[in-house]
Image (tube, rainbow, N blue to C red):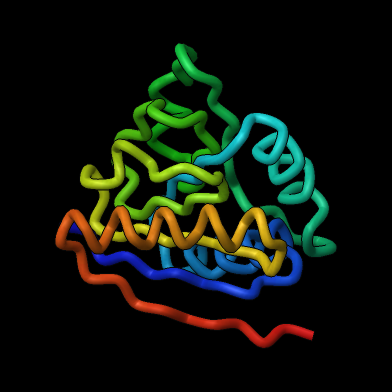
Length: 145
């Protein structure tokens, strides 16, 4: 079973995701990010301009699409619609409200939860689903400001 880490109370989910993905990229990890298509589109745009003079290599892959094999092998960060395979990615970052059905395919799952009531409630549902499935969940409350 994957290790599951909940980062809660995140004030800027996409900014936090950018920092998390930059760290993962610097550690040479391959990461899949899932969420609503509009959220992934905003994250895609933000990764291009997140840090001046720095680029976090990533690709946006919609359901049913497949990147060229050479691109897939060289790109460490994949922004994928729910259920879209991300070969070689060991970490999954979930920005969406639902429990990712393919979470068991990863070594590590990172759940980002902001302070809004809707996101907190969805996060609680995901937390309970992981616990009900017998997975160990670690909590990392954030105090950003």
